[in-house]
Amino acid sequence: MNLEMRYFDVSDIQFGSKTSYGGGCLFINREELIALISEDKRLRHVDMELANPGEKTRITNILDILEPRINLEHRDYFPGMLGAIRRAGEGTTNVLCGAAVFEIGSMQGLCGALVDMSGPGAGFTPHSRTHNVCLLTEPSAGLQTVEYGLALKAAGLKASVYLARATLGAAPSGMEGFNLDLPRRDLGNLPRVGYLMQLHSHGDSREPFVYGDNTRRYYPTILHPNEIIDGAIVCGHYNISTAIKNSTYTILNHPVVLGLHRRHGRELNFKGVVISPEPTSLVEIRRTSMMAAGLLKHVLQVDGVIITKEGGGHTDVDLMENCEACEALGIKTVIIDNEWLGPDGSGELPLLAISPRADVMVSVGNVDGMINLSAMEKIVGGTFMHDLGGDLQQSLHIPLRFIPNAISQAGFTHLTTEGR
Image (cartoon, rainbow, N blue to C red; front, side, top):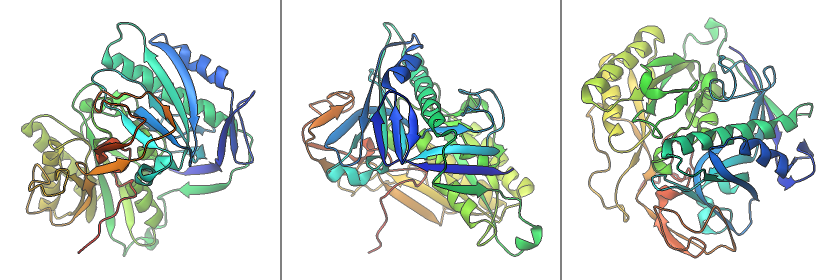
């Protein structure tokens, strides 16, 4: 499976009479894009604003973040969700690097996030460095939470592909190929490494979509790494904290998948990815961990595996059961996880569950840690969030978990761990 990514660097975004890309600038026909999204009658009102790095702007009520992309052969993206069902990870994909699409909306029961484009809060998120297209939506009367989430998802996907179409015919800033099919003699002495990607599956608005279907209907499944970074999985989380979910942008730029891919054939032999749901009962968790470990051992034949989770403390149980099942088959494990240590970091129970076999772990930080944010001149997305309250345009003292990718269970974060 061969995938070529063609990168188009974005250094500025402006509204213009025609949606186009040139000289690093993305011009957007605002009225045309709003009209496209407004075709969905689940949305009563649609608006759009832009937010660029360095501006004294705070973006609120962010529910998902996407990267504009399009497949050159099919002229669509996100198969099974927006495009027709087909296998992702093959052919050529155009990527608007440095641009992002924000799904923004507010409703009781939805958990929004917040991004500062400048000031002390900007250093906690990579999205203070992206040029952001903010889709501001309001649900139609009587629309339920689940349907509003689906409407937001459709809006974000449509906008992403619409914007990426501007790259058609343009010259890319750079290109990168992803192909695991190297000669066997080049890989014989390298450690065989896999990735076990736990996907939250606790019901509507609390799970991602895999080729358009809910993860709770999946058993552990092998995917080619290219599928992960080419739109096979999109975020479907709307009522859990941004710190314990992976945005669509994060999945498309997954640091574990990209890191293993880029070391393949030099430092290691990347054998593939197993995706696994995170069920709600212990017997289901043990069944899926047994099956996932079996695929890694007997099909992919790995020596070691990196395991990540998605979701809150309950999913630490999945993490440890997967760890134990893999270690029991002789597979060495490395676990990536967040911690729950209270506002001052003095908590005594960082994980809900722990296994003695989990002897190599990487922490991505404490979701309860507090940060101070400066007041902003402009607010996009509203001055109120259901989980925060107050006037969000003013200076704030808030938990880190409200900032996208300040804590990232996939490791897509700027925070580091310092040993003392």
